[in-house]
Amino acid sequence: MSMLITGIAELVTCDDTLEGALDEPLHAGLGVLRDAAVVIGGGGEDNAPTVQWLGPASQAPQADWAVDLEGRSVIPGLVDSHSHLVFAGDRSAEFAARMSGTPYDGGGIAVTVEATRAASDADLRALLQQRVQEMRTQGTTTVEIKSGYGLTVEDEVRALRLAREVTSEVTYLGAHVVPPERRDGGGRAAYVDLVCGEMLEACAPHARWIDVFCEPASPHAFDAEESRRILEAGRDAGLELRVHGNQLSEGPGVQLAVELDAASVDHCTFLSDADVEALSGSRTVATLLPGVEFSTRQPYPDARRLIDAGVQVAIATDCNPGTCYSSSMPLMIALAVRETGMTPAEALRAATVGAAASLRRTDVGRIAVGLRADFALVDAPSWLHIPYRVGVPVVRALEL
Ligand code: NIG
Ligand code: FE
Image (cartoon, rainbow, N blue to C red; front, side, top):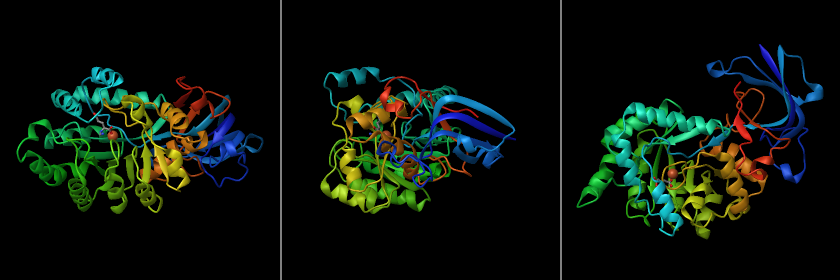
């Protein structure tokens, strides 16, 4: 069975080599077709429909049945390459305190750890599923999910198992912070041993990635030496690398990520010239999380500086109860445009192909013949309405 989708005002493929795409600077790099059609069908992996044809509606071939989108636009399903969705508890009061000037230092993570440990599997699963669904209704079809609110062997394994039920992009973040019960005496060193030893061994089979909160400016997070040890142990156990770096200060995270060829270094809020230079000569994607700056009153990262230096950038939500409890990629696109110096086209690329690159994936974040039909619908005549109609729910995953 094949299906013809017509009535597409703008089809954003994110294929910058697409023939016949609009060549206006506004749409640069997005491979946009106006008045387009798509044929999907067959069964790819998991019997999911794949794209069989795309092009101008006037040249569309026949199909078994047709759907008319009546002048709406289609973009690739958004890719949220950084989230912490497995948690329980509430930290809205901490948010309120920050809005009145209390700085963020990672200390609140312990509050979520306590609530998450106390939650039942069923409650955690329900919360997780609700958050993933919330993302889908805002256009996100691929999501990376980290552990990091368990911080015992059993609780980290549990978080990864639950995350695995909803995504293949699962990240072991036992090195989120040193848990409160291990902060005194030699507890810290023993915890790093655990993260690199027994906990890693138990968690590695359930994860694709390992991540570390590398931030000497936080007393709870990890310094360069600890982070290197943790990442190298993860790599030896077969995991691929991601890093939380340079969130609170010009720390060592970016340089370490580049040196170890991590797929992504995330936050990148405070960068030295040497950090930008290191990133520009590397395969490591700089993932910006502008919802964090929104929710912590920090200065926004400078995407313009990174892009002008030739660095590949991504944007993601970082959805978590502390620094950004928003699951909205459309909001992140709007913030990236308004606050980090990206053009709308750069922001949409960062939320699709850029974020896919940060997961070292080329099968999502684009619309192309042969790929899974992984689309989001924009209820507007142009994709530009995503940052333009900020706060209005114009984007949702297209259920096929
Ligand atoms: O990516 N900075 C480290 N971890 C999260 C925040 C976690 C929390 O505060 O609960 C982040 O911002
Ligand atoms: Fe994070």
